[in-house]
Length: 171
Image 1 (cartoon, rainbow, N blue to C red):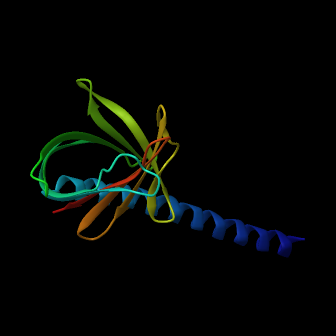
Image 2: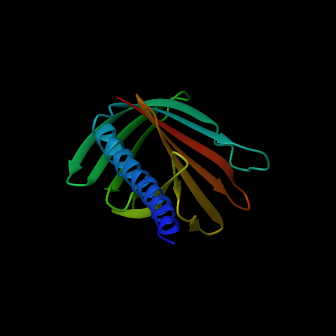
């Protein structure tokens, strides 16, 4: 009986250590993302209209990013130059919660930052907890963090839209 208890204790201890390591790894990833985001200076922009889309949003561009930090909030002020000659200005806010391993993404709309996505870490990528609905469209997002860049992808699906927008942020 005592031997069985020790075996179960060892299994539980290994499981607990494994779970704690996963949580620790998630916290480290969130902090690394925060550190990387503060260093962003430039970006690439790619938008693609996919099958059955009626939008014709095919564009490619490059841009500069000015970063501002306020505690756990990181603001991106972007100026994007598209290959067709257009210039876009965009404002984004990222809220990093390394304790809960969540990343909030906000887009500046109607003179305020609107929460679009909340990301959770799953299989090494940040994925949206749930879709963002803007009738009749649904938006999904994903963030991948690499050593030298952050890849942020938005997928838009609706009655007229089937789009992918990619932001590749670099130091």
